[in-house]
Length: 311
Figure 1 (cartoon, rainbow, N blue to C red):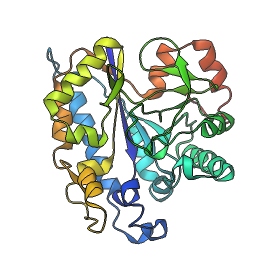
Figure 2: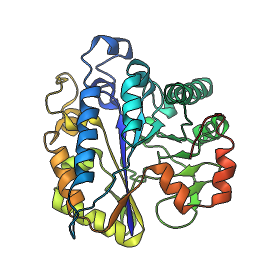
Figure 3: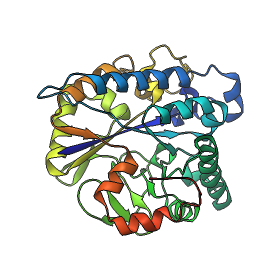
């Protein structure tokens, strides 16, 4: 059996790093929010994909995903957070206001990581165990703060070296598949990339998924699954929204990266899922629970700092 970890970074179109120089954080509240509508599209897509009749190629059964929710969104739309959970998916943190970890002071990082976690836990009434840094900007300092705040895992390491926003974390293998342990007591679930010689080819989702032809991307995913027992995919709700406002004053390259093929994202994802065989869909916490050391998980769960239920 192979495992597909489907993850969604829940943020609005105006909160992306590509447009930071054009759209100030202070203006967010005055802009048209489309994240609730777009997240519903993804939830409905997952419901439909999970209920599709089983064939030799199409995965069937419950499609459990992990939604990394921005605190700014959760604070304004607690009902959306509850609905995601009610429809069978895991809620994890994406920080509060999408500020890169590498651009935060120690005080800012600790405030962001702790308060975004507590905000989600207050909405849900249960422990929040996972975190993903905006633009994968993880740092060693942030890992230490994650541990202090009681997070069980991080899913921010992207080994594709050509993007300067991506952070660096020092890891070592722990068990099989994509899960590994950092040098601190936090599990790392890295983005899946394809190793080609000495290079890592981006194959985890996002803009790379929209830009690479879907048949080629599917072959890349199959190659990853042959080498390990799981594949981790990421996307954003705005990537399924062809009608979102256009930011005309952003640099041409950033507009190209943001808007290309957003009208085809869900159809491409449907193609990908229907051409992968014998898959099981797990949330990040389910994958760690089933395929890593039980004693370590019990120890980490005991440090969540939340009195509600976790696993």
